[in-house]
Length: 356
Image 1: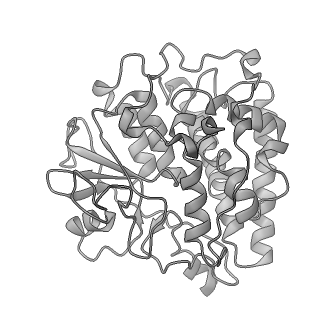
Image 2: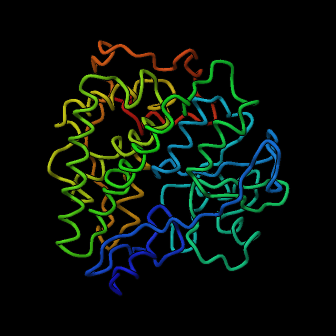
């Protein structure tokens, strides 16, 4: 790896803790830092953190696609009461995500202004990215984990006793091997692929990531042309992870990250698929387009030095008919849809298509 690429590996999008606005290293290929806190919250408490309803606080930002995956899963599984949620603001500085959405700028339960405080409470001088999603132990004020793929798995399995009646199976055993392989390529080429385009430090690195991104999107489009969901006939974690990238595609990735071969609205199958999921309870009702745009355009100042946030795109299309029900499928399998969001977790209508 070149020196520039090695330096780029320290960049952590959606992760405070790096120099503000420094996301692109000249000559380098973006490499995501995936060193997360390995501690788990389990039913048997083998890491010292047993599953206990109300003990932990899930800290998220609605701007972050990785956090959004956990937000959606928590809604679908009905874990709102068991695992309360704190929503950080959409922007951060070099130190940390902040709780500037709360009236006094502090999380009302943890009593902290910055997520960094929970990391430092457990790991003084923590040198990696201060990431969301993170789960904090309210009894100590210390971060427990920020390992978002493991959090997703554990919410589905270790927290099963506290899920709502009718919660869907997001990791069906019959499709486990297929999901593992699909998740790998979707992460590499799509979820992280948009960042490899946006944070590329050379034309060569950008062109390579761009080709892989759209090649994979074409592959996914062909896969979804005749089936409603990515795997089997129900919604799985694979759909959640693809959705959180697609929903950000036109607002930020197409322009801000130069992923501009096609807009999502110009890819008919993927656009219909994304609208189908958006209109499914637990998906679109968690999306805050205002937070998404403000994060990318105001935090990545080396890409957008003026900090100007685009007014568009128009959002009404997200509510238009998608026709995907003609492909069959059972969104929640043998389960049921979640109820409405909690009153204190409703996304402001002005930040959604529902304000149109």
